[in-house]
Amino acid sequence: MSKYKFDPQPYLKEIQSICELVESKDKWRHNSLQRILTKYPRDGKAIFSRDQLVIGYRQLISAGVMAENKLVMDRIRMKPTRTLSGLATVTVLTKPFPCPGKCIFCPNDVRMPKSYLASEPGAQRAERNSFDPYLQTYNRLLALHNTGHNVEKVELIILGGTWSFYPRSYQIWFVKRCFDALNDFLKVDNRELVKAQNSFVEADRIPRIDEKGRARSYNEIVHAVSRGDSAKLLSEGESADIRELSKAHKINETAICRCVGLVIETRPDFLDEEEVTFTRSLGATKIQIGIQSLNDKVLGLNKRGHNAESTKKAISLLRRAGFKIHAHWMPNLYGATPKIDIEDFKKLWESDVAPDELKLYPTSIIANTELFNLYKQGSYKPYTQDELLHILKETMAMTPRYCRLTRVIRDIPSTDIVAGNKKTNFRQIAERVLEEEGRACKCIRCREVKSGMIYPENELSFKELKYMTTDTEEVFLSVNTLDDKLVGFLRLSLPKQNKSHFIPELIDSAIIREVHVYGKVTGIGDSSAGSPQHLGLGRRLLEKAEIIAKENGYEKISVISAIGTREYYKKNGYTLVDLYMSKLCKS
Image (cartoon, rainbow, N blue to C red; front, side):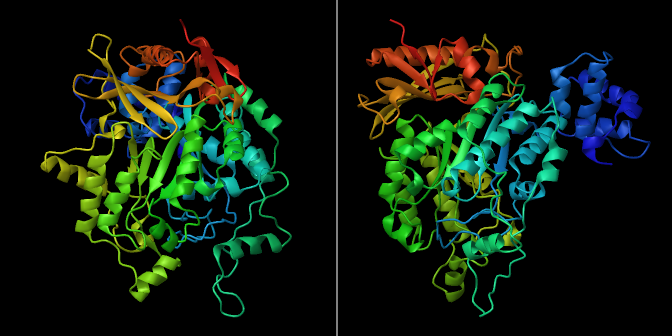
């Protein structure tokens, strides 16, 4: 029985008994649900899965048999941490396509967009959906919804290869189709129609070795697909214009499933003023950018194709445009040492870089890469466990309070790693050692409110953390509990010189780059008692940011609003001006 086609009707009596017992329990432990499930087996033998409970519970509510109780849903849903950060995250991948990079460490799995492996969970989901953006988005929303998660506020993350290298018509189409899925969800299901029109061609049917015994490169193999069977890398249907995307944007402003953040991944050397402006027109609010290193010698040895100055210029442009900056950094690259890496990490927090979020990805040796060949020759050695632990704990302890370490260690299956670290829980190991040493990581992720509910009577304090970048003074305005837990924050940029700007609507304007309130996702307009997302903290953060901007001489304040948050900012006095929401600061 497919879990998505489960018919709860024959089992409503058992599911009602389970949910009533779940609701009645005062004390709840990690194994409480399992004990209840064994008392009420399905068909007298099988145990109900969590998603089956969710489907049945929703039907009982719709029929008026049971009243909705958020406590019950919290206890029966699958993986509640997926929405504790305040958003439901949907990650999609673009289809395989030539990449301009020649990085020696990059995986060359021709079934995937460059740098991804078919064994990675997100990549597997993309391949099952033929890399179609509509199918990927819709099916991920369905999986989250069926396991009890609220999907009204969605952060959409687009990964795969070098985004800016894909034709713009494909980029626009890809984003539009993601929005189409968001707009359709819980209203209409067009998946079968999309499947019938799909034209994806597998790249792994092209032999890795050519007729002369020479190994083909990733780009050669991907290009070979377009020459065979009259197939094309991108079909004619995978194209759209900005007007079509704008229509999908408009619908999403008031849709059930709204995009409250759009994340796109690209390289530093592909960003200039025109590219940054175009990316913003897609609705993007955050950019994942591969820094990898700020050491030019290390970058050169690893054939990154750009230097540290390119990275600094790209980040400067992104920050001036109000984007949130999510950097990737890699210790243990070819030519690096533990000492070089720790010094390099310190440079990240100098004025030219200072990312808002960071993925800390120690280099992995993957088969069929140039780095793998260097390893076989003895020219490259991965760090020992002790060396890697030293680097991770020192860098984690060094991370500023305004940055979120979103990931430490990439989620690559150990079967794909030839040598070096294969532990996926190295972050937890480093955190434990830091605690033993009387230190701790103070990044956003380590301090954010998760399962605890925060009530109005609790004492909350607003704090300002200021730091300078090349172009701006940054203000990290946070809401904290007495024990230093982070309930919400706002990133405010105060440009040093803003009389001219490559984006006209940002001239003479302070810029709000992010507003985030933590806690379990609550529905749009839902005022759940005690939920940090509904204490009015977002509005209070906006008010304080406006005061700070005014005190610093700004008459206007702008927000890099996601498409799905435009209505929220309108309610707070902001008006859409081309690509940004803006308002005049109160006197």
